[in-house]
Image (cartoon, rainbow, N blue to C red; front, top):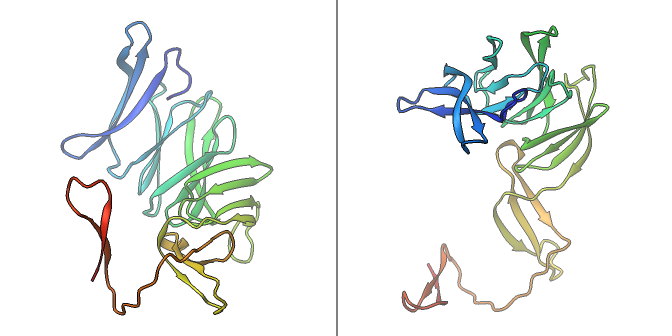
Amino acid sequence: FLYGYAQPTIVLLYQDPKELRHLKTYQVSTKDKDFIAGPWSQTGVEIGATMIIPVPTPIGGCILLGEQTISYLNGDKGDTKTIHMDITVIRAWGKIDEDGRRYLLGDHLGQLYVLVLEFDGNKVLGLKLDTLGETSSAKTITYLDSGVVFIGSCFGDSQLIRLHPDKDENDSNIEVLESFTNLGPIQDFCVVDLERQGQGQVVTCSGTLKDGSLRVVRNGIGINEQAAVELPGIKGLWSLRESIEAQYDKYLIQS
């Protein structure tokens, strides 16, 4: 949904049969309970574009995030501004200012950027993108206050960070204040007795990409052994029902 219109107005990113991508706006007619043609459209946007950010008034319009470019579009004012960047996939964004002048962007590699709209009070003059540093791969970004930001991650630990105006010795503007453990996504796990005390512990293959790790879960996990069969060399394990009509599995097949 776009800001600044009397009628509810949406902007859609779509792909045509030739695999070209375009933007098109529609308005919701409350009288007809249907979509009607919107005030503007934009053909031939970047083929790698995947995400739209609506910009609040008084700026208005929207930001289109691609893999190689970031564009600001406002068909009402005829504004189109584009900057190029290194190839990446932006996965999350968070608004810093209520008027939409600054945004935080997070990519699939955990890089955090700040995007600034240079607005003169009437129109957008240009875009500026700066790299702040590295966090967990973000799924959601929430700017709290006084430079403190929550990075929510589905691929690693979520983080509470503080943004500093100056770079540190690692060329980063980021200070991690707190991390929140996330075991997911768990690709595989096994139960082991690392200390040979008869207490099973779960070792998980957690996370993806740069946030992948092995985690040992010691607390909060209870393992009760139901049965044990000494069969060395098992490579596969699956269950079978006695018949297609059967409600429950009956056999455990080992290969």
